[in-house]
Amino acid sequence: MSAAPVSRSALETLPATEAEGPVACSTEIGAKAAERLAKSCRNVSPATHPPCNVANSCALMSDEIARSCALFDDKDAPIADCQPDPKSAQAAAAVIRLYYSAINARDYGTAWSQWGEDGPPNQSLARFSAGFAETRSSTVTIGELPEGDAGAGSVFQSVPVTIDAVLKTGEHQRFKGSYTLRRVNNVDGATPAQRRWHIESAKLAPVR
Image 1 (cartoon, rainbow, N blue to C red):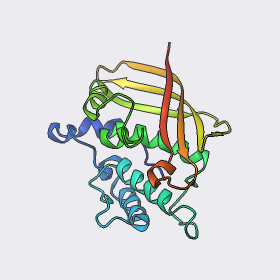
Image 2 (cartoon, one colour):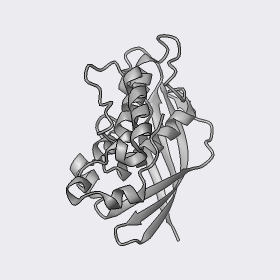
Image 3 (cartoon, rainbow, N blue to C red):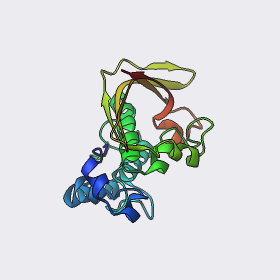
């Protein structure tokens, strides 16, 4: 399950003190929709204190759902809230939607973690966050998903994207390309985190 992108109006009407931190899910998509997402999060999360609270970003709760679904994958009967299938190409695409949802909500920690437990190559969380300092919002459009590739115990999935980023000045920047996502097959010793889709690399080019 992926969160809806944060609206520009929600970002622009936040008080200055709140605008510095992540946007609450209840602000992002409304109280009722946020509570439904929080309920789904609580239904699947095995954590003692899961982040299934409407005051958190929608992306953070969606990430907890994805983490939990990957944890229980293949162990029991399918869980109703675990859609799409954690191993599917659609789940890989959902990671990209979640990634931009987190960026739009200024939840850079959740966005950073979509690159895996260590974040993007050679980027601390602080450096990653600073890269979006002048961005007001981003809209991602997912293209048709090709078949995935398997090799050396891993599965790779390309996710074609078109990005429309709006700067704080109002200027639009457009990019087109793809993300490559990776997950480890259910081999002996693979951790739940490794069995989840995560961003492996990105190839994006400006579109004029």
